[in-house]
Structure formats: C-alpha cells, structure tokens
Amino acid sequence: MIIAVDGPTASGKGTISKELAKHFSLPFLDTGLLYRAVGWTLRLQGGNADDPIDALNACTFDGQLLDNPDLRSETIGGLASRVSIHPQVRRALDKRQKDFAYQSAGAVLDGRDIGTVIAPDADVKLFVTASSEARAVRRFEEMKRRGEPVNFDDILADILKRDARDQNRSAAPLKPAEDADLLDTTDLTIGDAIQQAIALVNAKINRRRDKDPA
Image: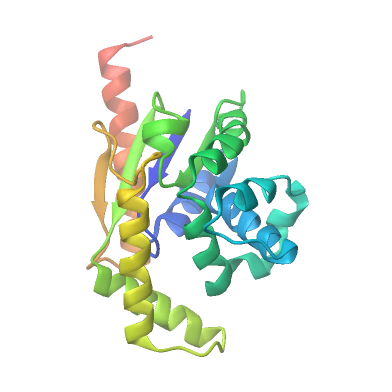
C-alpha cells in the first residue's frame, strides 16, 4: 500500500505521515528532506539557490545526510524552497522518491507532489492543509522551543512566500490530486488530526475492498 501525503509547510503533514507509517507498519520518507539536503549541500558549495545549475550540482549528496538534524533549520528550509522550483532539481530527485514509493513493502511519503507526480496511482492520497496564520503559530512555537531567534510576522511572511513559490512553480506545483482526501488541521489538535487521517485511510481501504472483494 502506498499512502501519499501532500500539503504546505507547517500543515502537520510530517507528523501525520510518521504516525500513519507506524499505524500501518509501512516505511516512511519525508521527501522534503531531500530538498533540504540539496539546500545544505548548496550552501557548503557556496552556490546560489536561484541558479538552476548550482542547485542541480548540489543533488549529488550522500543519503546519510538525511539523518542530519540541522536540515530542519529555518535557513535550510528556505533554501530547500528556493531550489525546489527548478525542474532540473525535481527530475534529479524523482527517482529516489519513486524507488522508495514502489518498494515491495509499500510506503508512506509526505511532500508536495507525491499524489500528483511521484505516485499518482497511490492507494491513498491525503492533502493536509491549514490556514497560513495557524501554520505560522505552529512554526513560531516550534522555533521558540528550539531556542531560535523568532519573530511571528517574519515567520508568517516566510510561509506566504513559500506557499507562493510552491503553488506557482512550473514544475510539479503544490496542489491536491483530483482524488485526494482533504484534511484541514487548522482547528485540530495533532492527536485529532492523526485520528482523522487514520480514519480517512481506513475508509479508502474499505471502499476499495467493497469495490473489489477478494
């Protein structure tokens, strides 16, 4: 079974995806880490995130880099958003994601184009979203807990900027797949959001079972 979970930054899709993977005993990939690894490598190389050649040259990172907790920083997140608009970068990372998605054990992947590009025939597709203000509050609280310098207005502005880049890029723009179930987490606790996600997956499994009984 392949579960594709898409949505904008700070919508809760990462936490939800991890819990879905645990609940259904499936391997999990946060595909955003691939783009963050490109951003990290690009910074080490002294490249320009807005230059497609520099960004493409940073796609040759070692897979072990994905375990680096520093990839989660806001700085690297911003670079990841910038390099992700380049079609060359997206093509370079497609194979890693598709190989993971279509392994025999099944998989849960979260990202921004899983249900539309990476695994368009996924068994279950969720699009997790929330208002920009709610997402900014979550990111603000997360950064405060990590002891990072934080300003709410700056975070909100950055989220709106990332949304615009993701939604308007020419390659694999952020949008729900036509057959995705929408999960709006604006007014949900993380526990409630996880339970709703599990319920949506179970409902899709049951619909498939009823349609095509063994």
